Image (cartoon, rainbow, N blue to C red; front, top):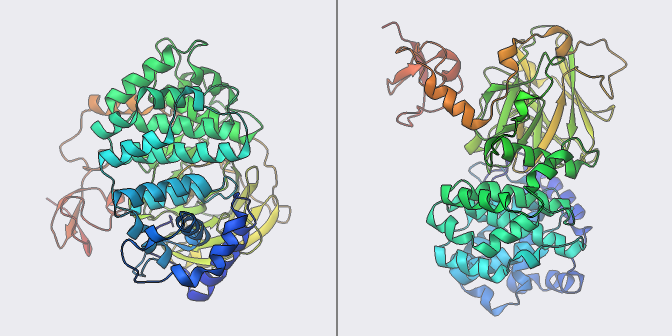
Length: 544
């Protein structure tokens, strides 16, 4: 389940252990604040008190807010959505950010102290900016001015500066998406645009380059910004830098591989260059018989042209299933972890729901199960079980085995058995797909058997999807989004088609609201009516 400020799926003992473990990991990270951090910890009882007045923090040193940000990092791995009250640290930060000066202080503190090494650092930024009151235009412009960005601010490889600049790029990208329109245009000053474009050069640390590309993508959601960005890219002295960065796509250095993926995605979907062949037109699909299903994916997930790599840069929990369905036997696939944050990877039936904006994905209902190597948890039916064998890291290979003869699921990391479970078979017995869900800024690559597995289980005979599956040529095409929209506009839709997928016949009436116009498959994905938002209690066949 995606991170949220108000829900904790684990029981209290498990949550406490998770928080302690994560605090230990975070405290071992160098954040350049050792001198004052210990003093604040000793004086915690003097300032870290519930029910303080709204301006309590003004009488304290700015380091107090930085300490609250780090405390949020300590607990964020245990936060998901339920009725439980949010932790005190989030209430404090929300209280501070309720006024313009406090909001700016919170943002500056995140930029100052959130470390690169912790995979949940970016999640803290997205969580706090989403949870805190939305700033007005003046506050955002004041913040941009305080960042003092320009071409000359583009950086080299000093560790401290890299951290600051990465965090600045994430902050501005989140704000650009939340404040689309005139506010987003005002944020993208010539100096800020020059800063982002300069970060695409070879002498910049790749993690700053990566988040600069993502920030440009977010700013491009506003058409005026998109035009400005395309002009800036096209007039770079050495040519469009995204064309150079795209060549890192298959780099053995995984941070560069992420840069290459994002550069290629932007060139295919946003900043299209006349005369450049789109990636799907040149990718070799001859040996691929199973891939991620572009017709069975939530709206903001990015899928590579070969259908085997997925990335999420949205601030929601995006999910996808593969094209091949399993009915019996023993099956195995592998996933190479390219980023080490929150992903839930495993198995799901068609009945498993993708509720990306609510934070529900694979492992969050009774029809799916997943392993989360960042938080070291198995997820089933929105409940988690701790697996304390160490966090996954970039380059690790997650192996997923489904044994329908023994009704067991097994998860391996680099060939070592990390976890197993039989819970999935409480409600489902067949019809399984490989499936995964992604938090913000996460990416992995799937191997369904089109190339040799790196760590195949040696104690059981299994089958691979690619050997037994088949796809028609048109099913292997991963169209860029602007071409997908153009194709949809050209399609003639039958009057009785489902109003969600437009493929199958509408055959279901939702009860008690009585709205109709949905096929059976799409209806199974719904918990509330798309038309009136009423809770769905039952579904009846529509025989009219």
